[in-house]
Image 1 (spheres, rainbow, N blue to C red):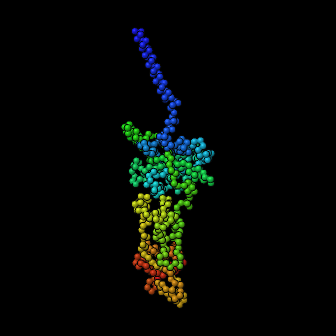
Image 2: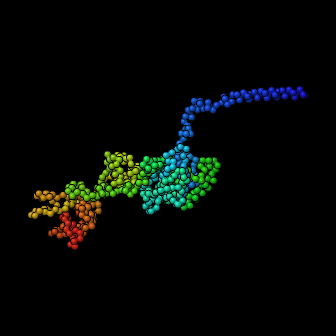
Image 3: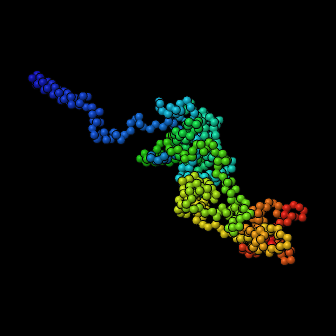
Length: 501
């Protein structure tokens, strides 16, 4: 028995020795000296993959981060952008955080930067018609702004500005080294821009975008540093809270497998990096009523009094008809195309068509223009580009009677030179309305007579009688009738009468 136990001990010790030897062999094969991760990564297959991966030093690091203190919706799928619900008019904090690493953007250290916060459309279709949409909102909400800063609650912001011509933007300066929070209030709700007044869930989404700039060599804040934005929907007061609760309850009813397809709801919204807004900051800061698109210059040129010596029958005294008759030519340059858009009351689309030649604009179909400009302006722009000017309802040729030299008689309506006298030069006036007041207005415009001084317009009848020109008489004028006219002072000395002969 003792022999058996001794044999077991010998066998066991031998097995242990052999097992230890085998372990030591494994250790020698896979020891630190033989197994080097750097050697493995040096293999060609790993080199190829490694070259495509950015190094930590090369990874893009945004200089700033903006965090809005509002919870994201839980009903957003994993790979979709976050969506945040806001209440109309409620103040929400946007924290402006300095996210620079040591040595990043050293030129702004100890200096102020400028940020512009905007509320803009998320939908691309609405972006094309943004000016039209905002003008419609402004018409329905006179005196209101789409976006405001709650200055008493804000921290660290300096030199805040709001431009009356840009109701959806605010700007301010801030120091990245100090705590900065801008409290914003959005006053437009998503359903105000839907074709029909659906419920809040059918409202259009907006974007909150922050663009930050540093000073250039001239001290102007025009050098872009960083831009970020997030998607939002705006509800009537308390509506965002109800919508958030509804989304949360819907998610609770889903299965665990379905919940995995959706993002969790976060207490705050981190704005993600995006392209800068196309407007240049200098245009925003320096904009004034004089820099906004204006019709002053076109009106002055179109409504100027024609030269009294002009004998062209096509010379139009009506500035509106003259402007509308100017068609856009395919050879028009970019600048001429922009001027044509302003003259024809399409100034809100000058930025959209800023790089279009006349030929480019004329190539657009009616469907293209409706999609870009909306139904109303799209059809109007198409008609302005393609159609002829509207033919006037009545054309009259008129000439101011010149005093005849003594002993000479000149026939009314004569077109000759009257035996060496000054020739009669006629002007065409175009009537869009067949009324007597329109005749007086056009005569005043063409012949530089103050309209308020014209008392009556008469037509000289048989035996030299003066017949008052009424609306009915104008409606019975023959098209392209010729008239001489003279002016006589009124009996009371105030104003003049016009007599057509």
